[in-house]
Image (cartoon, rainbow over all chains, first blue to last red; front, side, top):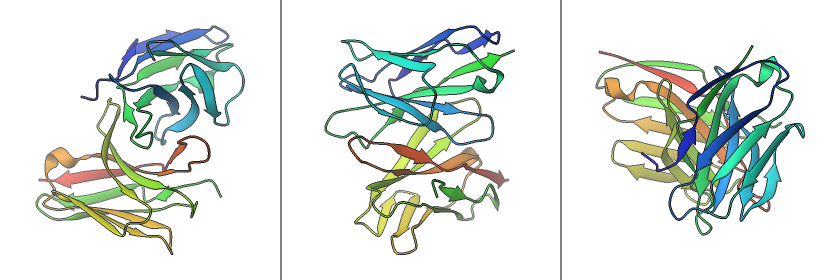
Length: 113
Length: 112
């Protein structure tokens, strides 16, 4: 167990709706990265938050947004859901001095119908 | 290109060694990783190697890195049925932050 938790475990939404996914970092970690893993594929980097600021982003549209809170927990928000947003969403946390070691949570399985 | 490449499937007999191969793209990648994912679970960081190393051994796991060919391999000695999972190779393309790029994963099946 990594100490990274995510909620909810599963979620079903309808196309066009909005969703918020949550992540709690491992103790002592101040950086959170979010990934999207479509079925049968490797995770794809969405963005990273460090000290409450977005400091890196992958090739995802602006309807994917995030927040990081003073306790370093984080949210991923997705607006105007599309069918292709159905995936496992993973968050990973890391510490400031060992940012190259990312520890993943169990993920949230999002299904868009 | 952007892609990290891996063969998609590997099948081995219990007790044999497994070798999973990967090619990555960015010669300036700082760290190379192997992650394990069991069905319905998140990713477990198995091991990683810094780019100035050739080899790293950790119990049953041996990682070999060939920077010239941008080739990474993971050898699992004495493979057990509990090793059946998907193994992801990944590279860290650090610019101003740790951006980790994953391959498609290799599904390892261990035959009893």
